[in-house]
Length: 200
Image (cartoon, rainbow, N blue to C red; front, side):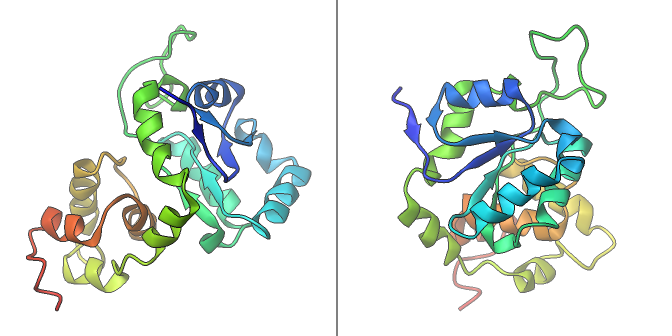
């Protein structure tokens, strides 16, 4: 398996996540040092500067801490400059640790190399990223399909996220952004049980 050549900087939480990604990709990988990014203003300033000239991939763990880190970066960098990638929620414990995380799920460092390769592969080609951005999936679709604005919308989002190997607990905006990049519009329609011609 040849390493992917990713043209975008990739943000991960720690050094072990970075080592894991370097097994599958050649890229500029920046760590947040966990919650260290909340204290290090210079690192946030670096991300702002990078975002002026390139999109940035965020690949944080799919747990509460990862969500806080994503949110913190998202408050400093325009959302259209961020590519939000998510690992699936898989229960387990990394080999180097004696105990699992507080939520009992694996982080980026615990993911199989093939999974990370598939996750990052679409971003080796900047043209493919631009094509994904033209995906017509919108907030209107989410509302019409009961994924936002309803009493059971959170449960519906969790069920849809599971179909695409995304973590549970995502907000409507986060799930929408992830699906616009990882799924075609037809794949989305099929997943929610809508025919491809209903939108036309």
